[in-house]
Image (cartoon, rainbow, N blue to C red):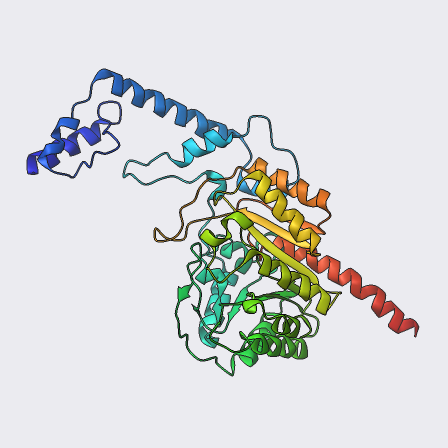
Amino acid sequence: MALTSAITRALYRAGPTSYSPLPSTRVWGTLGSRRHLTQSAPVQSETIDQSSRLEALREKLRSGPNLGEFALNGTQTMSSDALSAEEALELANAQTPDGKKRLPPWLKTRYPTSANYNRIKSNLRELKLHTVCEEARCPNIGECWGGGEHQTATATIMLMGDECTRACRFCSVKTSRKPKPLNPMEPESTAEAIARWGLDYVVLTSVDRDDLIDGGSAHFAETVQLIKQKAPQILVECLTGDFQGNLEDVARVARSGLDVYAHNVETVEELTPFVRDRRAKYRQTLRVLQHAKEAKPSLITKTSIMLGCGETDEEVLQTLKDLRAVGVDCVTLGQYMRPTKGHMKVSAYVTPQKFDHWAKVGEELGFKYTASGPLVRSSYKAGELFITNILRSRQQPAETQNVSA
């Protein structure tokens, strides 16, 4: 065993052209794996060719737009030499010397280190509040909490604890059949924290609480009302569950004083039973979004779709049409990212130009806003800024009428 390890280390230092293990080889394995330590010339040639292809792909990425440039010019058509789906997949499957897979560069973000990020994190700990930003391991947490380009920090507060009664295959939030009782002081603490931060826009979401008679809708409504009392200028979005299809609970939240009602469809109808918890139904989600609009017609309704779960273009298009048919105003599309090895695998890394395509389709179908990009999430701040402009423009005519009267 010691001899095998020594030979392996020596060959590893010599570089990939002298030694390239077969895919099934474990270099730390038994003596029986020694037969893989000397490869024939054709295998070496194949390794060299593969390395050359990967290097060519990396050069293409280096010469193209970076993620920041893409975010600033996301509506423009990508250059003709953008990565094809096959090239993106090949690069995604490339491995580092230690055997770890690489992600396409458009899915990489910087580690959050800003002072504003640290301040918000400290306040959350002090007030014992949870955020979906942390629980769902959102890649945009540094940009949203840190303020990013627009210097406006946004955090999505998660109400009713951090234990969910459901177990969707894509979600990293903890699951429990009997979560802890609701904290009766949470609505007050949440409203106080939000008022302290001085935000213009806030997103409230929650775990699913099927253990509660009303699904937590009254808790949601109370939180919204307290926020509006303490800081009436703040625009409030609620990203809710489906309340098991109870439309009275949906209406309670819709009429609580919020400005945006969001409920995520997550994926296409064909994949819903395999991606979401069995209690979540595609048609039920459509009914929730439709009833929220019926309960308060002035509400902006919003939903989100993950791509890369195995869906087809035809299924995505049909989903967008179904959402428009029930009056949904805004939709976001982003890349599904596997939070841990215990969760559903990524079926495909969707290219930036494909996300551009869906943004155009959303516009053609009549959505007020379509945010579509690899790192876009349901609470992505670019969408919030756009929705803020819509809501503020609605408020101005009303204020003018009041002054005239």
